[in-house]
Amino acid sequence: MKLSANLSLRQTQSLVMTPQLMQSIQLLQMTHFELTQFIAQEVEKNPLLEFPSNDGEGGGERGDAEDGEYAHQPEDAGSDDGYDNRADALSSDWYNNGGRASTSRLNDELDANYTNVFPDDGAPQRLDAPELVSQWKSMPGSGEGADYDLDDFVAGQVSLRDHLAQQIPFVLPDMADRLIAQNFVDQLDDCGYLQADIVEAGERLGTSLAQAERVLATLQSLDPPGVFARSLAECLAIQLRQKDRYDPAMQALVENLELLARRDFATLKRLCGVDEEDLLDMLGEIRQLNPKPGSGFEAGVSEAITPDVVVRASSDGGWLVELNPDTLPRVLVNQSYFSRVTKTKDAEAQAFLSNCLQSANWLTRSLDQRANTIMKVASEIVRQQDAFLQHGVDHLRPLNLKTVAEAIKMHESTVSRVTSNKYMLTPRGLFELKYFFTVSISAVAGGDSHSAEAVRHKIRALILQESPEAVLSDDDIVDMLKKGGVDLARRTVAKYREAMNIASSVQRRREKRALAKVAGF
Image (tube, rainbow, N blue to C red; front, side, top):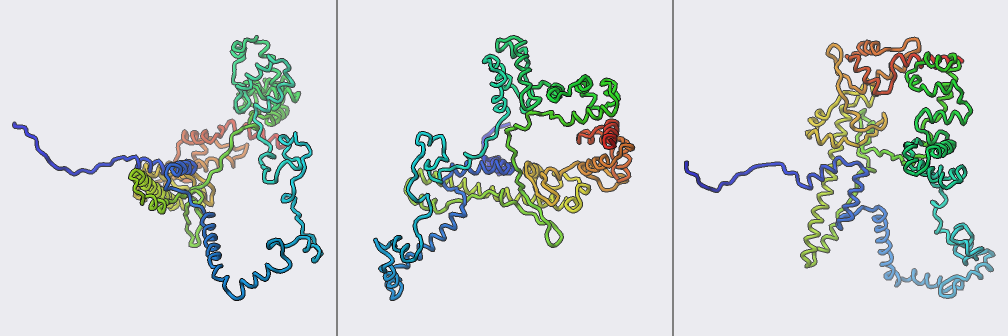
């Protein structure tokens, strides 16, 4: 067979992930905060991008009007009335010294005091103590009113470590003990528990175990009560000791917290040596203690969630879906600046600005496409979950990404990116978009399937309605769900119950009976 080389043309299509396409996909799944940061970086890098300013627009209109008014003044200056009247007024005896009215003359002839009544515009006040000006900003004469900052008068948030550092010098006068205490303070977690081994800490600091234990015992007496504990039992014991309630019965209860978690009250009564009434009193005291003494000093700032989509009821009985204007990014392309600069003969500047214009146009188109995609997905979710918006969680329909993707003719991955970290404000509350996508649970006798979230809501409602004498087991819940048309296995009910942090029927029966007796007392 003879081999030969030849030329041929072939036309093919392929999907290429360009950098702009990858960045457009990233824009789609960004949160409002991340998108704001990204746009701020792009505006800083691109001279053709700028944020719109409503104040600037209004100011420009006012400025134009004022300029126009002042521009017509020379024409009016030659009129018969306006200019002459103004000249007569300025030349009257009410004005002197180049057009300024005499304050003393006005005071005498009008029997009024026209002196300056605003002390800020008057002569500067004399400093009472010039050497203390830097320390006392509120001293008379120390500065103008504009120098005041409201932040100077707001109390700062005290952290747990700062709160403890203020108390340590009063209880530990020795510097070596303070060094050990500072090491223990540095190893506290956010809840106030000590995450350190005393033996290792003593060896690292070159001190004895007895000295480390003595310092720790002193630190455990500080405020808040229960701080520097190494376990939950020790935290509760410290607080009970400060209340003088750590007797042998309470000690036995604290040392067997696992039995309390299982609601094994019969064993606890035997170990503590008390009757049922005393045990209930002890449990009431335990409930009043703080298991996380350092939680009140958390320095973390809670961030408010801003909804991306707002759903309201419309007048025709449907739902009105809108994008939240507060989360829509606003960025403009300065075409006038581009046209002015491109008139120059600098080829390098023209090439740079051409790339900037292309990047700016791409960003604006990507932001519009992002908004349209979010709107399409949100509208389809509202259409699918109309019964939920009208009647509540019990009517939440099972929904998956494929159903929404096929309805709006997009890929499932696109819908997944849109619903990631996006929130919808509805008359039922604020929900993440992924909340509306739940697993389908089959119904009895071939009926309509049920949403897993709706089934969990039914299980929670059934347990809340049970009485101490008729606590529902998992089998009872399965039977009641089947009567409501939900076909669910017992192990699935147990899995849902544990996911909602609901105890078993045995533990619930013990707890409800104990609470009923406490209410009876």
